[in-house]
Image (cartoon, rainbow, N blue to C red):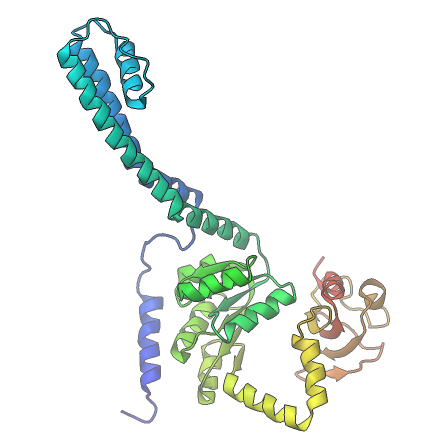
Length: 377
């Protein structure tokens, strides 16, 4: 094997080619539509309905034939209904002989067994939760379709659950994709309002079901670097302008993630080590930043907004922009569109050109008011 090759890269390339170059399977959609719900109900209820209907038709035809024209079709159907429902009105047909009574006895037992079968099938359909699951997934699909600028969290394990919690705490819309049904159910119980899709985030259909076409950002956070790389490539292939944050266990893979399309790459082990060192060196500063960025109290956060073209404050200076009047916020840092550095404690003369990133400290209501000023009108 040459120095430029690695098993991880070869395996990743092979899987990527299979996913992106081979034709997509024409399987069922990840989340159900109304047609899927109707089809499932029809499939589950067809057998019991057909069984009961068959016995009813058999009884009606049997009485009509045994009566040799003495009893009309309506009378035959009425007698069948009385027999199958065990109402107990008695024999309504005149001139019933022993053969007809034997047929009636057979119809009673057959009807009872078929009815028990039908009731058990319908009960199982309702109790096993198949219909409820489909209905929940249909509602979830509608909820995702109504989202705009939401975040997609791929992987909700030990690292992913805090991501979900922070997005939920800061009142951000999100969709979770998790392969493990147990982890997915745990997230559903803890965050009932958050849509959770059980599926493979490297699958284009799953990403589409999560609303990648109208999402704001995606986190690739499964426990395998190769899978995360595939998620990044698939997400970038689907949305060239998407904000993508990728988890990487191996720092030497950061460049590969960036070339694959990741906007940012995070190494949990490195971040954890730096955090522990910072806690030793500057504990009070770290505590302050933790409270601002990740505290349990959602009333205050350090956050950022982008000034969009055509917004209410685009082109104005900080003095002219009604940020304090509308949102009661002070801007403590800016990043200009053409600069990777930050302007700390900006003066009122700083201009808010489109693309400027504004960094503030405030509660969710204040931040939402600021976003109202920075969004395109």
